[in-house]
Length: 120
Image (cartoon, rainbow, N blue to C red; front, side, top):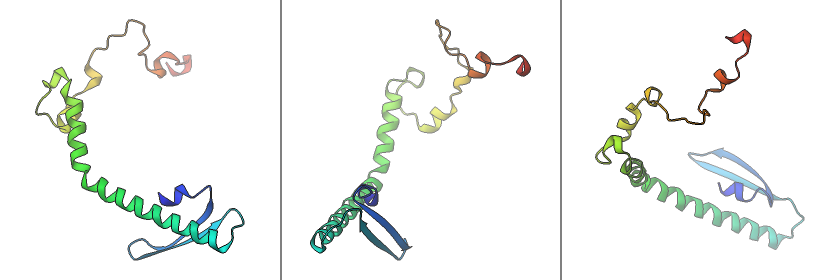
């Protein structure tokens, strides 16, 4: 992710084993002097720290995000009563069997709407 931020400024070559060591080569797309290249390298290191922290926080909060998402999906769902249901309960609902209110007739599968005589 940090490399993506720098794609406009530089060419980035990543080498090595992600489990052990990664070697990063930055080559500026513009002619920069030594001081500017060093600044580019420090900015890249700052982005690495930023994304590393983001990844740790994201992993740490993944369960709470899942719970919030489940709760928000089920809170207004009258079929489930809005309480105590899990994602597994949602997955068990077969929406194919439910009748759809379609007064304008737009909920027609593409295959049915555009089938040719050879495909009938």
